[in-house]
Length: 68
Image (tube, rainbow, N blue to C red):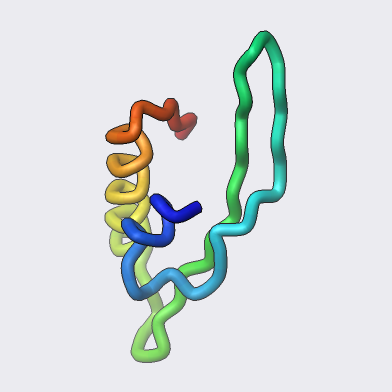
């Protein structure tokens, strides 16, 4: 969760909140919910996708597999 918080930036309004955990064959899969919000404007898909690209890069930088 710390990696997500640190890489998501100031528009991360709520979360990350883990809502699922699945274990199989010695592997653990986690799912998180995040809410992005701006008080100044409506966020575009492009803006949020850019943030998510940074989050994904940070997670993959730790050696974790991210399903997109």
